[in-house]
Length: 171
Image 1 (cartoon, rainbow, N blue to C red):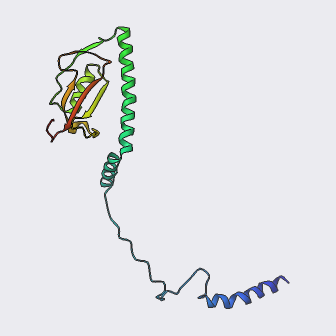
Image 2: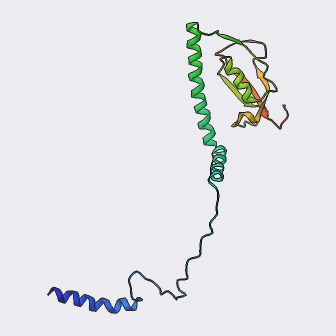
Image 3: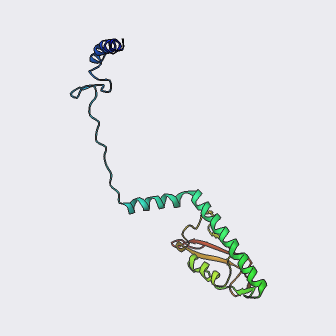
């Protein structure tokens, strides 16, 4: 009985397979114009460094990345301020510093000068009021500072630096 089923199913499926082109998985024949060969994809070659540079530019242009970076910086600053405040309480460091002249300096250099003096609370803003982020501080210069140069400043006081891009004039 079992042999009859196999023979019967083969007998019934045989003509169907022939009508469809001879096989279940093959839709057309090799020489058929119904299924022309797939076109070759155009391969673009970029070096890994080019791709990495492109990804970095896209990352820098992404406003979410800038916000994340500012949040991380804010956390770091909060930890530094707490550390400085603890050191002042224990008498390890002085509570004040003399504000240096930062106008005209590179923004990154100005930040470094403040941090050398134990000042980590910094508000850096776009002096043109366009509200641009200073993603790469070394590409900006300080136009205005608060407190003024020479002032005795608490290390826990907020210092404000207004800056423009290096190729721009201060307002």
